[in-house]
Length: 495
Image (tube, rainbow, N blue to C red; front, top):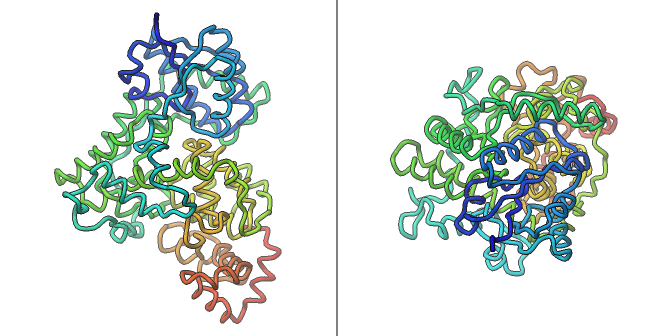
């Protein structure tokens, strides 16, 4: 008797999953749900990536796969007429849905999720009953556990963290001038996906963002090419400028691997082993390799596990009592309605490609929202919907915890926000901007500079008690124009 088929979700497409030894003889079920797309509508290019990935895998697997286009997942499974095996899905809602399907006999077994280095059981043993964790501690334990960049029981190079080497401001030129990333070539499947999305739009599905060429890998072969291109041609210059922002060079030396990683097209340990090998053979400095490895087995894994550890109630955290609804221009990705060049460029990146790197996310979009008191749950959903790598598990801890400090400090020891001086130092946005990053009051006062002090005033008591932010409170109280600044920011509508 043949084993039960393997049902793969749209973010479980990798060869290390469907061709693992335990699945060698299994038929693969792929379901494209029109109801799911319409119910959780987001960026058009994100929908394209997911549909393209599912259809490419169906074509790759040929007779081994059954590809269903149905209204809902249950409809397809009922029609199939056989129970399926499934790996743990990547959201609380999907996990509960799979549990219901199992009760109905439509799912016979739920296997561990194979797309992260550390299992949820192992993380639970590491975390115990704790609620406050620091990524650095988790990351070091990951390095030891998986023997990554270790020389015996010591970190390679003598240090765990080379952040101090990875904070350079952008060079005084328009672009980094590095080799370009790997870009995909669209095919007939992409053409068909685009036509189907056009039909959905005609039927009233309101995607965000705009259509555009596919920019990210959606097959295992493409993901392997993208990884190899990054390791061989771009990793060497990644670390030094990973926190910098440039108008004319949105990709800079970033890997652009978050989409294939979050579609589970790459095994994270394969990714870090490739980076480690480049360090070991002298192709890249340890600061660049370590910085990238930390993103994968440190930060990415940490966020995944905390999503499950904290549970769905984490979305209710709002310790700073922030309830301002997202303004229309922000919600609609209307970059042309924004004067501040940095914020406009970040929104334009989200609108045009559904992706900007981690510093625009944290220190532009997130910092703006924090300063203005936007509702953290609404903001988290905005990030999930509008970023092509923004699946359910990715955003709550990143946005509610790290970006908005709405969890009361479970994730970060201080709020992450700044005035215009930081943006001026770390980007080339400010020179052509109509706002002056050095001014906090007046028609050309930078909304980030003024917003920083307004935020500090609003949360003075909390910030004074934190030794990392107490100095800012003391500085604020010495500002001679504080009352004027607060009045200005209380009515600001122009950014």
